[in-house]
Image (tube, rainbow, N blue to C red; front, side, top):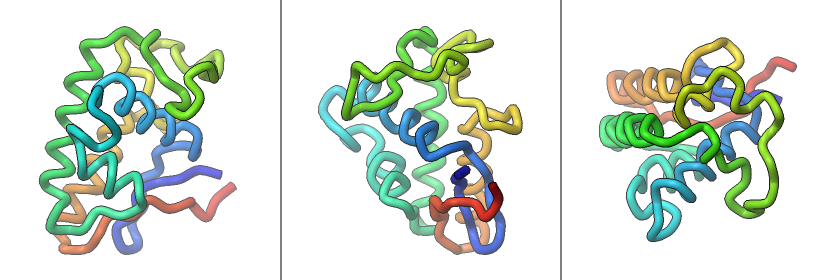
Length: 139
């Protein structure tokens, strides 16, 4: 079932729960050598736990932008599907069409996950409501 970032009644779909966990896993393994949330605490702790408070949304958005910038410097082959089981391979199509590691994180709608998360966080900051990770109602 797809998941997204929801602010009030607005939802930005990011993909399956496995795909979202791969995003967090890749950030943890490739960008946070000191441990989970050591460099990107709002994204890796608050968003991963399911909610970013509206007052933290601008800083979380800055973290998303920094993560995208850093993942663009890495090859797609650096994708981590599961930080808890590094032997677990990504699906065969996960690297398809990606020029860099950031390019591996494209939503089913063809947008980078960073754009979807960024729009949700920016909306959260503007509207003063938390951004929550939730399952979508669709199939």
